[in-house]
Image 1 (cartoon, rainbow over the protein chains, first blue to last red):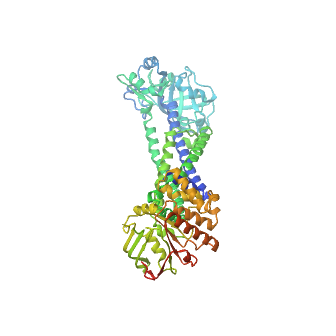
Image 2: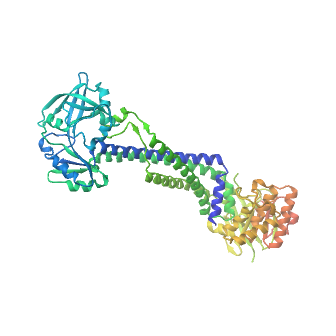
Image 3: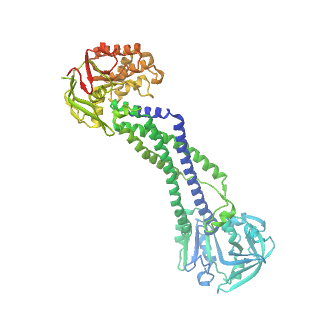
Length: 409
Length: 226
């Protein structure tokens, strides 16, 4: 039989109970829109945290001494880079490199009379391009100068928590190169804000030379942080800068934990995707089963006229597929609109919530991001599952005995 | 060759624990071009006999032959093929596809049979004209009277130029004027096309039109017709 007529019957049957058809389409559209929005959020959070991690913590490539372990933030000379200026100069000769800057990290404790907080002291060359976000994120006081002495930057958030103001003197303690405590009194020169509460809460900046003197590191650095024009060049740059005693790490290496964490999180979202798709599929199957029950006698007529079982089945599958397709189109429009809106406006989750995830840089406002691959995959998955869920009602219709079907009411 | 041969056919229905013998050893031959009424009270087995002749159902015992071919044990799809090619149906409740208009309802069996578009169009328009519905071709069933719907059903039953048309109580839901009109149309088309018509009916108006009357009672042929 001409496929066209089967389609015409299926299409017109959809119009017989308009309210039910529209409600079912809405269910499909909303289900898909929710999935697209979820995927947009996950994409936004994942990409966002990776971006922030690169921007604030890892850069694109880092050079470290072979024995350096980032978790320990060791200050022993053997774990530090001896000749950082030569490495910086070497990196900066490469055209792919935008900027290279040495940093020195130490774990410390910041104290006032009332409050104490564990921090990561970061010694920086204040004019390094990698520190642009801090320079631009100053909200009070002044940014660091290379030769500033006895001055530090802390974040607005830490200042609020510890009730510290610009110009106030605070006590800072670090473990030195021999593991012995060193303590000093510093003046807060300015307050910065990056938007990543977890990062802001634990980071203290001072000029590199000051940090080197304070921790007894001499002229050594924990790492050289390199920013590239194009992140894709990271592996090539890392390979070129690898030398005996020096390990070069790419942003992918350094964010492996973050990426793994994101992947673990994804399995939960896949479960959520599955549940939403199944709920929609059950709604469709139910709608179609009702349609079959209402049309038992008609199915009997079609069978009496000589329509084959597969044609009857095909008619109902076409009905559900068209229902699904229209729903999916609206779902894509609705979901995309929601993603586009929240990509601009975002959802404010609050600094306290974002601070909880101290290992994942999450901004206080989360933004969605288009993930076209997910959108296509989710739409196809939705269509396939709906058609599969319609198999039973369609099969049920096709298996009806013409005699019984003709005499049903 | 006879259009249909029914040999010693028995059909049992089981409803719960109760077994009903709807047909009890019926033997009957229908020749091509017949115009036959199958009469008898409700429950006499008329409809069951029509369903067996129309390959809608299968007997428990006995043999059903269409044009000499034993169709007793054909599979569902083979029976569908046979119905599509050889048999037209008219039902008491008109039985049109509600979402299709008159033209499309008559065209449906032709589509199922893969008839070419031009021939399809010609046949549909001729048939609708011959049942007096040329001006209603784009009306859907709910926009037509019962008499008009039954005439569409007659046109549909004849669209594939079948061997025979089986009509189950075709006038039961029609008033006298419409019933008479339907009968006259069927009689005329029987003469024009040579298609055999068999009616199951308990409507006494039908009997005078029939050239042969088969009476049924309690699942048997009453007057020993064969």
